[in-house]
Length: 221
Ligand SMILES: C[S@@+](CC[C@H](N)C(=O)[O-])C[C@H]1O[C@@H](n2cnc3c(N)ncnc32)[C@H](O)[C@@H]1O
Image (cartoon, rainbow, N blue to C red; front, side, top):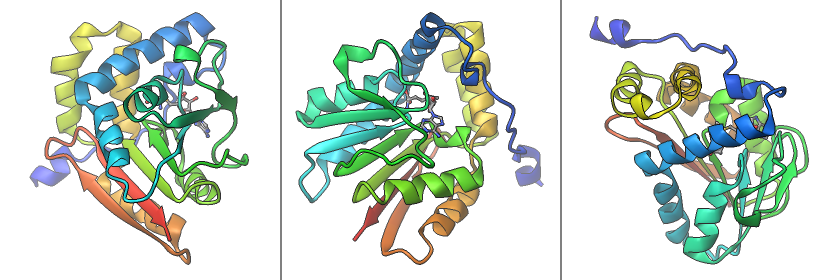
């Protein structure tokens, strides 16, 4: 009973920042606010830790859907590794001169790297696009760390109470839509299993107790 009350249908309605017509300045402001949210949720820190714990050498990190490059800036500062980003919309100005290539990660050839990270991107994609992105990444890296939101009323409530009051109204609206658009852990697990079917990859899937994020950590042998 409680489960059905808490259940939310996935909404695929676009967010404001998906509009390719928005100006570079507005786009940069959105990404600046997104960086604030990631820091509040410790998403960058969690990714840096996962990279630090990699048992194999990490010399080059690729960020898929990197926005203006803030996560890569943090990774380069913390680990001193080479970094490169791809995004559908490569910005004119990246953060601290991070190299960013314009590419569709579901179908374009990605730059080679040891590990790819993919933060707050897959909720923008359909199931077949997530499958294509994961398989495509597997051609360029040996490990892919996906971090995204969880579709559930709890993170929506926490976002509204603790973060939205400090954000611009448009960004807050996109934040709420991002939660409604994201995968439940059960859905994401199924999509990842489909993407890796027949491959030599294995993955771990973790969800925070307050459902503020889910992490899928895939390794190809
Ligand atoms: C919510 S933003 C996240 C940006 C950044 N990862 C972060 O967390 O700060 C989603 C980003 O994914 C990019 N994106 C969406 N679909 C993509 C695709 N198929 N290939 C590459 N980038 C994509 C968008 O252009 C946008 O910059």
